[in-house]
Image (cartoon, rainbow, N blue to C red; front, top):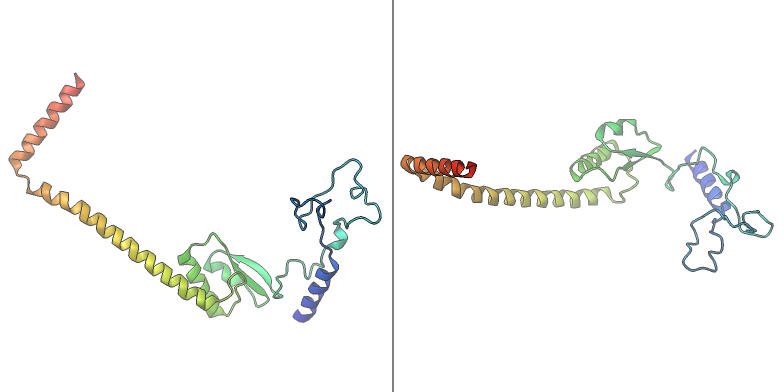
Length: 185
């Protein structure tokens, strides 16, 4: 069944011409493979005159069985959390959303390996997992170093404040009150 669908997909791709933009062969700045509808009043392509380039129309569309199929023969499903993996079946291919962070992405890939699902937007899943886990560990280590530096910086002034005697505290309070009263005048 899958081979028939793949062959059908290949046949449809061969039949479909490349719809080029009008005069893209003459003007270098126009992209060849990007279709734009011709809008000129005297445009022969807009009038669909004989001998001109192909015009896209519904007749060129693929059959529904092949329509959103990946070149591997699987139907892609966008995944953004582990719960959505329960909906994926053998004829589906998982595509992990680009908005998923590294932590959740690693969890999704491990779950895909357990369920033996194919991930379409990552070629080498085990290799990607090792690299991603190393990056995550390095990031966590740098975070720990930063928090330790912050803790050291904040700890030093706190120790000095603890050493201040009760009499010095009273003097500081009086000075602060005096400054507040002066500012109000």
